[in-house]
Length: 431
Image (cartoon, rainbow, N blue to C red):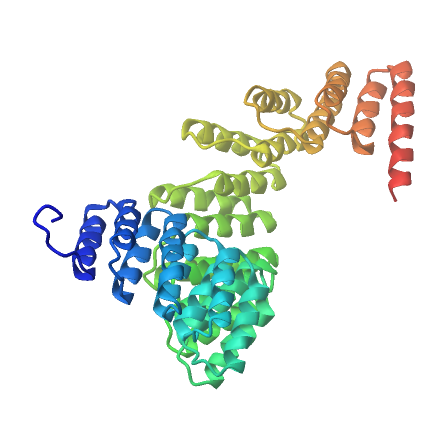
């Protein structure tokens, strides 16, 4: 174009920037925008908006770079250009930068629209900055900026992220009072906020309201209310909800099964937990460590060490990573049934697999050795706690002392009592 001496204009650059977008060459947008400034071609709002939006697809920093090129030459920028820059920051979760640009709009006397507020609030909500989101929402109402469903969704989601269920509930009520139609996303966010705080009764009430308003609950709705009941130890209600999900032609997810199994674990319903494990495999729903942890814990509480070990074996075969919770529950199940050798095998898996051990792991293994009259092994585990920098407690010494007592190792008992006395004094000082 330069050789034929054709004059470059904004339309030419718009076409070139659009071509970069279609080719996925988003980083080239900055070069074109810089060339445009050097060529003294004045950009219009369309060019600026397009360039910032496309550059932001690659990196939010690129969007800000394009935006900074506009400031010296454009004077007061239009709200739509600010919106594009803030949208790029939303994608990069840069809430502080987004607030800075928003405040700059105010200083430059550029009117913020409903869209502007919504973008900034979404950015803050993604980083759990619910206080900022609520402040912006209050500012909108003071400035009489039109509120819409997107705005409410952003602020309710921010409250949900932080478990501020009361505020989320109030906002849902404000929507109803304003004759604004709420949607499943709004209800799900409030349900999730209730679940995070264990407000199972509120979650059930809200879930019932969805049915009354003929709003069809989604799998996410069920997941939240089942999990809320699980946290409230209402395992029977959780399982009833789980069973009703299929009746509404909704698909189960890994989260659904995990919440239902956790409810079984709380209710010591190991048989129901195992039924869910079988159903998961039948429905080809992906299982994870959380799912198995709940099932293993249910077996531990039900005294079913053999089944707990089977689950651990299935996890290994399925390449599901064993974690501290899994092995602690399995070791405790073996300890409860005096299966000391199995408990030590699991403890060995923990050490060899570089799974972080806790005092719970050691105490369960030591207690298993005590029940099996394996005092030497119990003492070995006590020594390993010190080597692994795991702080022993009164329970550790109590199990080891009992093991030595059964083995008539009185001198060792006295030594352990001395160590136990030290632990107790340390605990007393901490109170």
